[in-house]
Image (cartoon, rainbow over all chains, first blue to last red; front, top):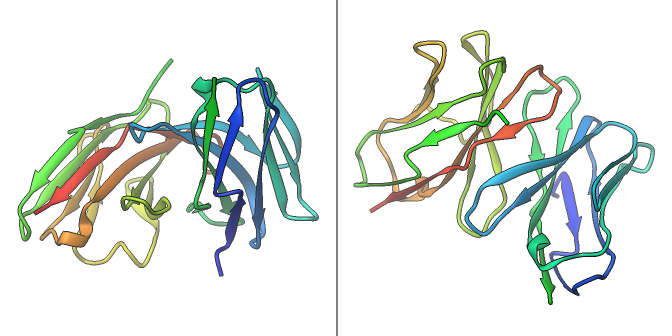
Length: 109
Length: 113
């Protein structure tokens, strides 16, 4: 069983739509990361969360530690948001990260 | 904005050859990591490095792999005798502390033929 599960695997949206990507994890964590991977392959860190909610521009990330669940929301989506979004969990007392399989988002104009 | 730099961006090597992937982390980072992503699969942890030694490694990181930070700036991943299944994108990352935001390099695409 994967320690980090993401849904959906693929998501297609029209420009302007509100997007939600979900992440569930089974390990105890010290932090949860949301990453963005563009078609060229490079990875950019979007958020690191250990509780509550963070917002950066049109992106919002939330985490519920008790339910071991996190969501990434994109408001007013734009074609340039098209990318793979990856959830990664950092377990307690560990220096590694456990990655989800990613959600491939395509935003159509 | 400071960034993690990886070279080369793409390396093609023959099976059995040694390869060295290079990374220049952000200067004030103390923790360093290598990850790999086989085409079409998820990112996998290989190794973490702190205070000039390996702090964690995964099952993937066998005797064919080694890491070092020889001069206090470059952080390298060496694969001693490459196999076809080593073909993947390799990412270097760094954090200032053990549990702070991770900064990733752009990756090195390794192709073993």
